[in-house]
Amino acid sequence: MKRLQLHHWILIAMVVGAALGLALNWAGTREMVDADTVGKVAMVGKEAGDLFLRLLQMLVVPLIVSSLVTGVTGMGDLRTLGSIGGRAIAFYVTTSLLAIVTGIAMVNLIQPGAGADLALLEGDVSGAPLITEAPGGVGAVLWEQLKGLVPKNPLASASEGDMLPVIFFSLLMGVFVSMAEHHEGSKDASVVRRFFSGLFDVMMQMTLFVVKFAPIGVFGFTLYAAAGKGPGAFRVLGWYVVTVFVALVIHAAVTLPLILRLASGRSPLAYARALITALVTAFSTASSNGTLPLTLQNVEEAGVKPQVASFVLPLGATINMDGTALYEAVAVLFIAQVYGVDLSLVQQGIVAITALLASIGAAGIPHAGMVMMVVVLDAVGLPTSAVALILAVDRILDMCRTTVNVWSDSIAAAVVDAQE
Ligand code: ASP
Image (cartoon, rainbow, N blue to C red):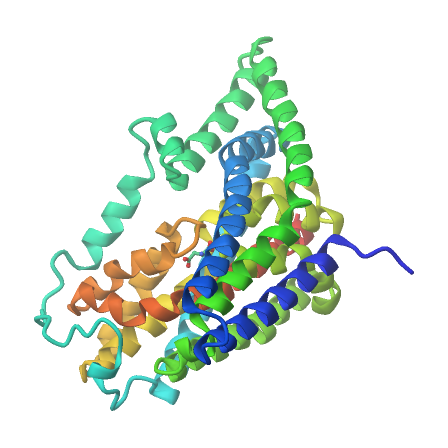
């Protein structure tokens, strides 16, 4: 028998975890197993999953810093960096906007929130006052995002897992290591470059080791979700989930593959196959940052140049979140429908722009997108407490949108690679 590969084990772990969890949940509701036991088993699953996620997260800061510094200095000429960076950012913004438009179209078409009974939804917030004016408007949101790019203290940002300022600092560091080496002829600057490139190699090795535990983590998480919540957890918010899901599928299976095919000539199916480990991990961990080590590995195995991958992917894992952008837009429009608020075209435009900003600002960790949604709700004057409405189904949607985020990052790498 052919030896099973890691991604086979991950898939098996997911299926077995879900089956076991659903069976437990079923037995629990029929009192064949007492609820306490079901809860305990679910918690063991969660702890196992959390431990694996921690292992992955442990790698993220050193990996991102070393990968970006190495990526930038590896490009040698700063003009190459400018062109790769420019292309990557153009890709990020274009695909995120396309995702948002898809989401807005679907939510207007399906109308998941129309006529919904507020009281049926968990965490009823119907008493919350409706505000009509956005406190700061889009300009203020934009400015906050820009200001937040600059770390007051890069080490503090790193220790808080605040990745955008860390990325900003790492990029600058890469640029100035290159400048010092090439322009100023500093011998010692090359020590810094070699240090980070060595660190990067070490981090990749460490990643390969940690990833071997993925099946255990994935098994734990799925067991937890299935045993703890059961199939009924999603019923009330069914249409909302369907809307987000359908829009995500359209974006991931139509828009992005088309872009990949046209801009790089690669076969989307073959590319998806090469990325399967990263995609499955993204789905089960709901963390683009956590998945980054695997994304890097898979994308390079698929033949994308390491200099491109090690620059485009870390940046993408933090700022390119198509799935999250789409989700923000759909969720806010859904909430508006639930409240019976008719958003004008201009207001939907504001939702689109702030959803884009929120997705850029969201960290690549579980539930970050939901936290950022406050920004979008605020911009169109909906009560921020309405986030409570969709809390119950956030995890499953997070898993789906994170997969799309990682898929989009990987496509960005292939597209930029093909154009260099
Ligand atoms: N979990 C997502 C990610 O890591 C971010 C989000 O919550 O939307 O990409």
